[in-house]
Image 1 (cartoon, rainbow, N blue to C red):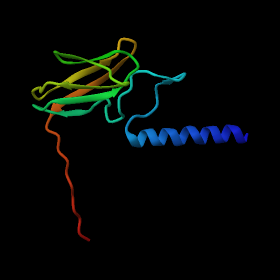
Image 2: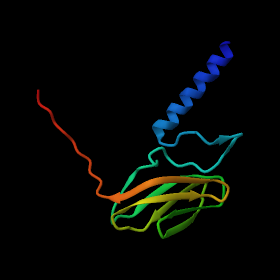
Image 3: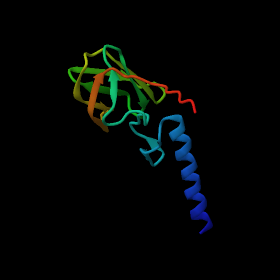
Length: 125
């Protein structure tokens, strides 16, 4: 029982650490990492219109390809890490974003391009 509890706690600690660092370890497969993207990328996300779209992650293959709308960009994987910069796009959507390394494909749906606002609100009591 102790071994089971300690291994579960170890896995939880590793998961929390990876989640804080931005790359959760969902795709760990027998000592080999497959296509991984940070948790910031998800369905229903909004990218800033008319700005370059930066995608990044990890893979154990030689190249990664990203497709959104009519844009298809490929890049090489260096030291297990990759980064793709998609060209600026006009406001619109919904789009589908597909990121593939040849072995695995991540698909994100309902992607919109528009204005992204961050607001800080001060409440005085």
